Amino acid sequence: MPEILIDKERARCSFSRSADSYDEAAVLQREVSRRLLQRLDLVTLQPRAVLDLGCGTGGQAGQLLRRYPQARVYALDFALPMLAHARRKGRWLRRPHCVCADMEQLPLADNSMDLICSSLAFQWAGDPQSLYRECLRVLRPGGLLMFTTFGPDTLRELRAAWAAVDDHVHVSPFMDMHDLGDILVNSGYAAPVMDVERITLTYARVDDLMRDLKHIGAHNAATRRQRGLTGRARMQAMRDAYEGFRSEGVLPATYEVVYGHAWAPEKPQAPGRASVPLDMLNTGRAD
Image (cartoon, rainbow, N blue to C red):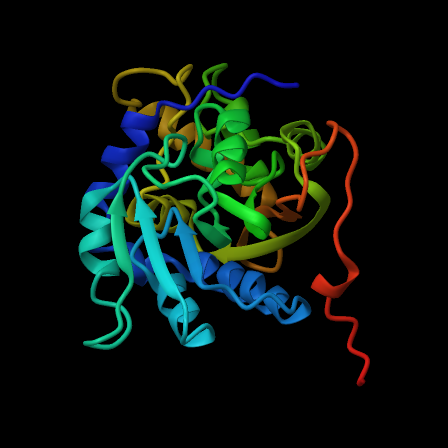
């Protein structure tokens, strides 16, 4: 399994600084969350307690409040300024319960959640194995984990442009879908399902892409990144290299979006084995 080294403190500070500008630039994040929540139409789970893990400014938490009007919805993020926005989602008498915490050390009781939804947050985990085990710990038997994260092809054009300039790590690393699936199995989940799609955004200039990344707080958080400022000459060299990807007058920015879901088993099971009750699946048949 590849080594993934994320400087979580740098990531937390970046997202904290970007809380006020996040919603304006988070076009991709809203679309991926919409597609994630659509997948909940395929399950018959009626949760009493729902956790939006890595909630950001709370857009998804607001959608979960509407989808599950009888459930308590918790919104957790490690950036307190993000939660200042999330706590205003929903209605006056029905808002998410906000928690500021590390998703790898959840301040939640065992077997306390029926559903955990997380969109584009898991890639910021320092220890993915610890994260998935924590989610399983707080899920009730028969509970569901549903998430999206970025795969290694994300921002491949930006990676290639920087690779033409120097040997430093300029884009945060992301795990392969198959490695994530192995973690789910080894952590003890039942019936893990993984799939992937690619979404391409287009920009007039590479500086517009860099601005959007800054506004959502998605800075390079690799522990092996170069310290210090990048000089003007190298920035211009990166821009020139990125121009090689221009097509039909625009520059592409590719995102590899990994979708995953898995169940907390009704009974403990051996690693590598997976089962789930058929009545938890919505087959679309009318009784």
